[in-house]
Image (cartoon, rainbow, N blue to C red; front, side, top):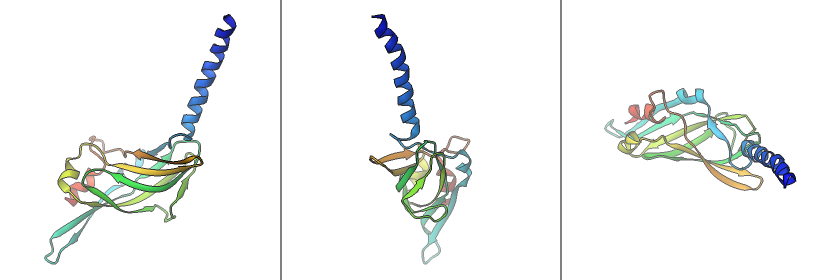
Length: 167
């Protein structure tokens, strides 16, 4: 009986360390997070004018930087947006490299996003920040993960600073 207890005392902590190592490697779920200093890089407003000089289509641009906090590289094959009143029109990797793009472990990537404001009222009224959705390839298959960029110091969603100008 004591021998079993002794073996359990050895194997349980070892199993916990192994599970933690697998999780923090980014093998199961990509560990993409927004770099804190890139919050200020979010927000330029643009708009198209009709024949009478009135705004009829508004856009916002953002250039957030994302960091792969995992130990293993992450290959990004697609990027989307989940948030009310906004559509993702165009996306480029910050240095113009084509997708799929591999972010090494502890490396970073800047994404230049162009968003169309489809519903100003819904976008401005959003209490939650819009999420950037990444489609990521692993050696065992692909997975989708959401990254919610940080807002400003007032706790507002990140997209609101540019929306106030666009709407």
